[in-house]
Image (cartoon, rainbow, N blue to C red; front, side):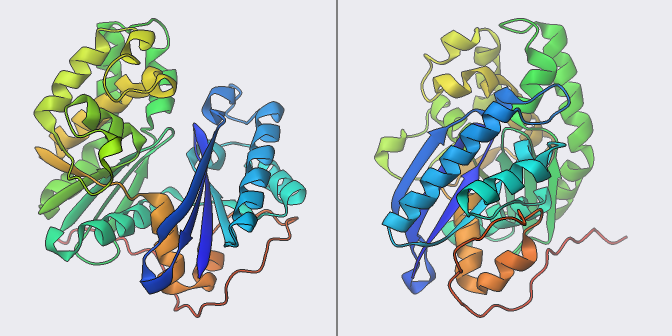
Length: 343
């Protein structure tokens, strides 16, 4: 079975085509389109018409590529930049009407659940009780669990691009008052979730997303050309130094640092502040950088639980779309499990 997934994020639209024999999504083709949707959001949070048009073209191109590779789907979803937009229904309906691909948004907690599943499958059961952090452009996902799916999952409005726009766009590089205000916001938002992670006492903590991958490279981990099987770790003390380094430089000069790409240089400081603050509040000194994230989580859940899971889980599906029929794989009922401490 060959399946595909399309992920419309804050910066890029990505297509992954994977073979699913043996229950493991092995990539055979990947491609991305740099749209930077988050930079084309109106003051009220809605997505501008020009950005919607570019999104439509990218999704159409992804669908054509998936067909050329004889893949079912694609399973198409958009993350926080579309999920939080007041005109998200219109955006999704237009994508469906003009491409024939049903695009949806996923609740933030579901994104955390799927990313946790990907990290669990990558790291294996020897990881034990597992904490998961994922910094996106619009939100931060946190999860914890002892099994295949998390016992606790949360999504917080602490995305690197969102916080950059809110706190760090007044001057480049930002001043200390702006950085202090950013840290206060992050600490306030993370207080309860961090307390839960400390209470659970994870044996392993994993981080995913391009933001964490680039920060890990800045802090000395192996470059991407060494492949996904090289173990990469990120130490909290190194991340603290990375915050100081990034805060002293304008965005253009950050892009000259190891691992920091030009498109993400502007938001790298906010991502580093969120990452360091989260690790400090959660009592985590060391995290493992996991190459699998939400796209692999979607593929794994589809492979393991079937096409009905995707239909039952997705929200805001564009009603005007006529999507290709998914592969008929039987699926048990599913649901997000969120637990709270007793006592």
